[in-house]
Image (cartoon, rainbow, N blue to C red; front, side, top):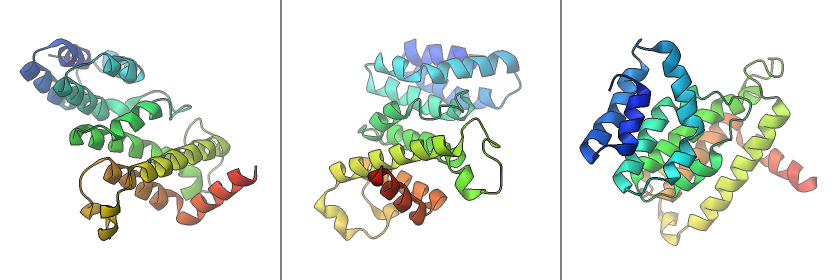
Length: 204
């Protein structure tokens, strides 16, 4: 397996051991200098079609290998103007029973929070300075992300969580994964920003 594209073919079609090895090979190839031009084109195609490919996978172990491998290359997608294009898929992954898959989904969602909050953290820069998104577009995506995660958190809530003071001490599961992303949102946006955003949308 000398290319990322070959690795993903093995992940999707190979036997369990080969699929697992291919998933781990992706990271090595990502940071090698082999096939630079083709590599980045293949990465964009793989990430853009990730949710559709995942939907075809029936084996639990193959799902894990695929999601873990996608999470390694996810940051190189070419959808800066539409960073929420895979959010519905990632929201589903947050509720997966496999902890490795949930962790991968958390990493991918957290990756998008940085670019989405640049206008909040660096207000001195002109709109669009860090990418194709205007502040108003970023605000809309952040609002949708916050509301979905808040609603999902409410749906996943169990009384036993009352005894845990810190997110790190929560039992592993979807509720903890959602809380980790909400905490990252609050850290990047500020509590006041999130409160204002919600109030603003309620008045519209």
